[in-house]
Length: 239
Image (cartoon, rainbow, N blue to C red; front, side):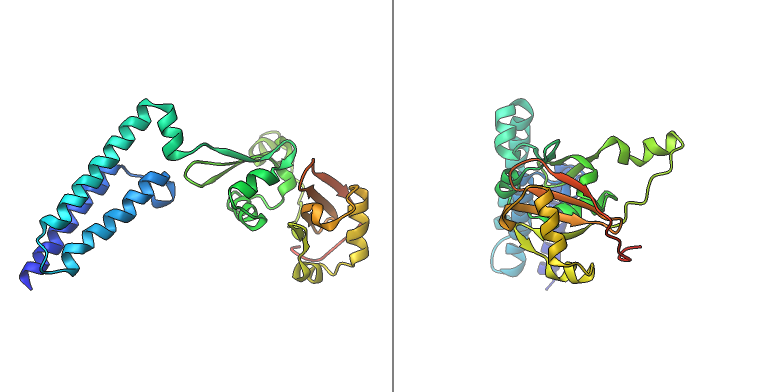
């Protein structure tokens, strides 16, 4: 029993030293190769603790090997852009001046819910307010709003920002979001009319359509520029 306790203490110290050597990034900020090494560290550290017959060295050697591999990978990545791109990947622009990039989102296996969650985390609740959104190499999404929606600039100019309300998703990837349609008390005729205004004939051609409680409709086709339509629709949702 005392041997197991001693092993546990030693493995804790060794893993702690290795993690400290890897730097102070949080788990969500790790690059892909760093995340892989972190998971493997956890697995190898447990081996000598769960298998009491194995000597401690059987767990220490893989840990030292992994830490050496991490140091070598980081060193080469700092020296070579090609290697860094191979190990970490490249940032991907998913929202640009033409709206959402449907092809890039498919490549990243991302959907509208992922985008909306990232926007909410940055205190933006309407895709039409965003000029650029970039998926960083660690998976985080950086959001750059349009100038008129940048709260700091508006405050500095003494301009009171207009309450845009909460944009509710009506169509997502070519499909009607029925729960939200009921929530907004919408008629299908209203949706069809907005699609006609945006010159979209087929529902499946719509990547996302949102409607806020002030009547602003945002329609992003899968291929093409987004359309913003002002309507007289009014809702009590999110007021």
